[in-house]
Image (cartoon, rainbow, N blue to C red; front, side, top):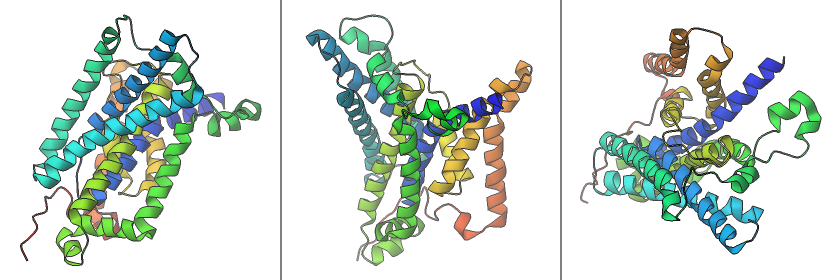
Length: 329
């Protein structure tokens, strides 16, 4: 029983950054933009939060004051959103305004984002005349703080109430995104842009504006996945390339969830479990490496199944990955 609870708890922890990335990418893809730069955006979101938190904690140490809980949370949070939005804005400008190839732009953005993260992750302390590794103990502690009554509820508390606020925010954002895309006028307009931008343009929808804001908002949500990883999962510590392939798993979840944010909640937990199941399964190294392939194998199976069945509601947006050229009127 304890092993299962520990496994499910670990699966949820691993699944939260994937959920942020998947939700952000779903919103982006609903506009017709295929942003393969999500891994880089999540990376920049994480390092931006680290930079904001470090500058604040460093200034407190210099002034001899105690970091305030509200600022320890707010400054990294806003820094993350700013860094992620900037990355998404770069992608939008290149693909929407300049009509650059979306696949190439996204891959370049991922490479750039990882490079930016590793550069600042390795140089930030030297900028302030310090040495060692980045560790934001105060900030990390506030982000990891669980609900106060969790310890009194046994396995129920550990499984459902033992997480920081970013975990619950991820689920709330996914639910709201699902409602927004299916129940609101703006969400339906966004889906129309992703399905047929020419038709949407003909009825007066500003295609360029929708593509821009959907990509930027999606990027900001994805960036929170990077913030969760560095502040909650690692407790405020930064390790170059520590994020691993989670960004790519988030993109895979988009397909697995059939472009539905609410379904993405369950899919993220499944992928989180597959990501760490090798820790709980005693097996030779060769078998463990095969187990690590399971998330990608499952995604391929789902993609093939969706392609064969061809149910319209389970298909990606019809204009996904295509640049829109507005005809003269």
